[in-house]
Length: 118
Ligand SMILES: [Zn+2]
Image (cartoon, rainbow, N blue to C red):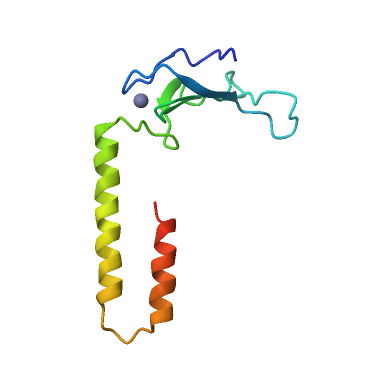
């Protein structure tokens, strides 16, 4: 695909150059046309094998790191994921060990739904 605005062909964090997905957002009313900003430019996206997605947002007139696809080689991101995992484990232990007057079925439901937290 020929992206006009995203020039980076490597992940800006780890240097991964394997592109696994690219796309240009389509116009909601006319799927045969690209979505265009009223002052020019279009929304482009490029994702690398490491998981990082770059997005060009015409409102800001620059390419940014997407919040939806994060580089799995990013040390800060790995640390954030580990902290979240530790927190979830503490939360699960608290729910299992609490001796409040909460029935086991409710505890089970809460524990089952924790997996939806990210
Ligand atoms: Zn990367």
